[in-house]
Image (cartoon, rainbow over all chains, first blue to last red; front, side):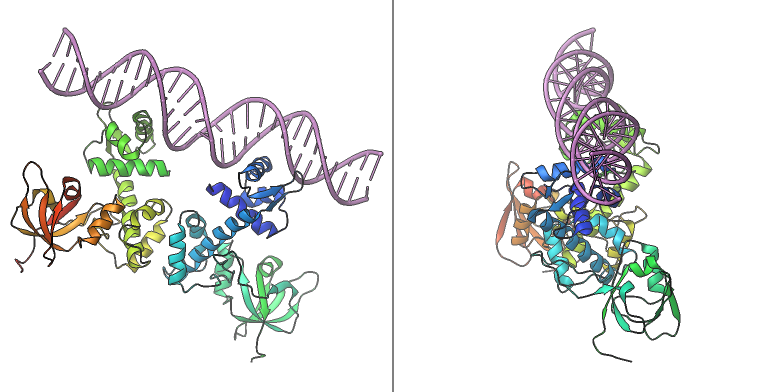
Length: 226
Length: 226
DNA sequence: ACCTAAATTTAGGCAAGCCTAAAAATGGGC
DNA sequence: GCCCATTTTTAGGCTTGCCTAAATTTAGGT
């Protein structure tokens, strides 16, 4: 019950469609890097499992059942706990954790999960600022929004950054962008141009293109400091 | 290069035959819990790999090549480092570590291996007293011998215990037998009867049958204490 | 030399997970 | 209502890693 392929598929559905939206065949095929025909086969299998993992209507994509969502959240919990564990206990850098976690998330037991959660003090967010699902399937939430939508002239705090591209993480790290760091948006250049912003207390102005800016989420700053 | 099945087979050859002896088809079939016919197929594959993992002569079993030995020792290093890590850092009990390590040993990277070795202070022995191969493939050695061969009336120190049977470990744990603990052999009962011995400073006399005694290795005590 | 136990080969099979190419169905937009 | 893009189906294929049963070979002991 629950091979690696199944786990990855459920995780992909959750990441593409969330709790109760449908994920499309094409989207899953891209996410999982397999052919659409293979996805169709996998979806049929997942929906015909004894307690089904997904609810699947032909030509209308797949939606997670309660069981499927629980499993997806469990894998994501594994992944994010492992990332934080690698970072904090084993001294992995920010950009190294994702790849290792991608393998380990399928290999650890519930016991292992509990133990590292305990060692880490039952953390709520991983090193990139992503919320770590709790064992009961609930998510700690933090009201945040896309950096793209930030008002020019205002300050905000980095909430989370995408962890999929190690080189992007290295770059962000090199300019000091991490969850919790304050940024100030100077202006948005016209015609979907770059965002010009300052990081932390530094004077340097950085230009963030659409790809980079799109991978960052922010939240309002609590006190109107500095 | 190096699937889980291959790794397990190389590890089994090492465990059955060591560095330069041959492992038999039947022995491997038992160890791996697969049929002899499947073993023959696997051995042929391993010996025909591009840099071959084993040297294989029909009807004469298999012997590890340098490459095969290196791989086997790497997996065993993974396994034993993970066992110690689970025990020391994640508070696993003695008897829980083996099963978890059996899965994780195939999933961790060299980086992970290095990091936990560093956190643990480059340890030489795992929680059961087994030597942890070094990265260069050498083994820390400790001159030890079988408990079965111990002289009645003498003292010795427990060097290592087999980790394969959790219930046996629980039992040993409950009577205080751990690597480093001193034991005193009172007598060996006739006709391959049990060994009567005392553990540590306790007065109780324990009877060790052949199975139990066979899973324990001892070494001479340094000082003739107490 | 012969016998036996171990090992090997042969032949066929199964399941998971993927692939391809081509054909058929479908649904949503216009 | 039609068309196109997406999706699904069909049909066939591949690899890995195991299984079985039966036939055969081999090594080693006596």
